[in-house]
Image (cartoon, rainbow, N blue to C red; front, side, top):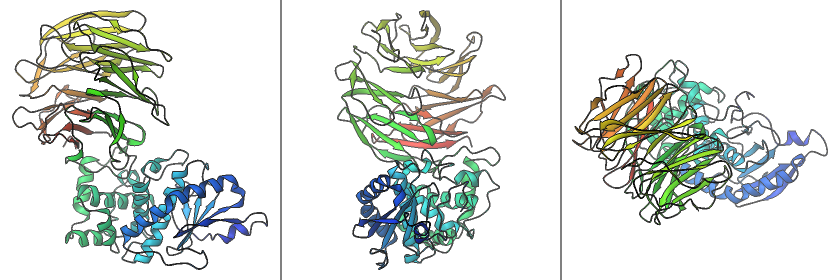
Length: 584
């Protein structure tokens, strides 16, 4: 057991060892369900009681799911009075049992308040008992079995992979990616405490499932003594490690720290469907630990959310009655604000306070475009939309209340695009003369600049900020190609055509001060086009990446990992599709 990494592993501590520390310290039996008996160490008191009750609520369903995945059940144990015993103990040492086959499982309670963390540990340790009963090659004392236990625990309780209060978390893929990447597919590392080997093994199991498309149950039941044997049992092939490593080297080049906070970055370089029936592009948001949240309006006009946290968790209804595309942002860690235009043409807000969703709130209107939102700080939100007379309307929240809608003037024909920059708002839109219209808003002074930049547009523009002295604007021009114009101590004189012809307006992001990524849909075949700015040369890369697909909406880009771009689109089947691409 290494305290630094809180390894989920077997060790030699038996439950009776705790009773020997003093006559007042003993395990208290707290009943049983069909397959599991529950105990907690007496010093835990009410906390132990509450956690065993929480386990009782889910453990039988979890046990049944594990039995289905492994194709076996755990025999009855007379000592425990059930096939498996769960023993809760104080501390932060993860989960453990004497041997892989031993069903007496001890689970650390950490803060005592995170019920899903205890469930996560239970899945990891119970799965190791199932491995021993199944006996096809998964070894809980080696890298392949320990990695599978973590993959399963994450699949059951994905939010606990990076649980608050757990030093370093449970993810291990980054240890292997940031090493010289040895082969722990063709052979196991002979302990369960080496994070480099565990990272390789966890990545490979997820590669089998999410990149190659094998079901988790199939992977488990066709397991072998090594992961290469498992691969051969699944595919009939013997080239397990080579293609896997080549893919990882392409998307996570050796050398720089990978920045990965999960054990599942897959699929890489291929489209995946998130299902749904949509007519408008989704809104996307990157949260902590690499989590992605996707918001979309369904055919019933309700808002739906799908979260990626080591895997996609499925669509969750958030109700409401909206038209068009929503807008989402996070003004502080753990907080989410979603805005959309309702069926009544008013702007509506829904907020997540870190624990639960609030109620839908009307902010008035009417709106004649999708709403744009930006935050200048934890207690400041600014909204922009086009009003009935095509003027730009603005409202802000000061931490306690919303201001009335302010008429910013101008004549704007598209949804506005806005970025917070040096304490002010930089805004662009499609002007009344099909020109690029630019406005600047300062909280203390209101709108201070309203100007036409004279470019000829055939789409809504988008603005991004690379640093404190660099703005970039993208739009489709009259020649139907993508044009780019930048500001650095003044607007550049000319827009430059960099691709085309395009079927959609462009979208763009600036992952850092030296990076730009722009995406649009090709008018030729409705595939996704991706362009990359090379800061070293000050030009766009010669290669325009054709990422394929058949797309019916504006693409929505998101940067979650260095050098990678996640793009979300609506396909011709009206489902949301996602692709993670790299610049190679």
